[in-house]
Amino acid sequence: MVFEKVAELIAEKIDVDVSEIKEDTKFEDLSIDSLDITEIAMSIEDEFDIEFEASADTKTVGDLVAAVEAKIG
Image 1 (cartoon, rainbow, N blue to C red):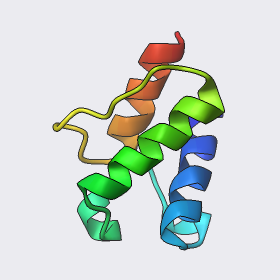
Image 2: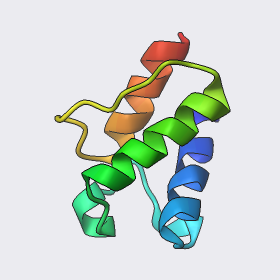
Image 3: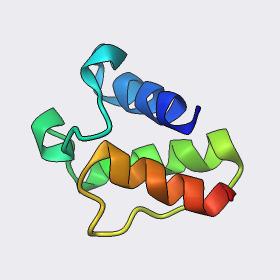
């Protein structure tokens, strides 16, 4: 469930089909920069009602999902 919602948020932000986003997809392959990641993190905060900040070593969608899952327990 977390992956699906995060993938939807990313797809919405960068205007791609959600089916293009997999857990092993790298942000650089989607042309996502640090500003985009910050904006996606803000959307994640709203969606999951958590305080969230993506770390510098968050390189893939799976990394992001794991960080969200750790925050929501």
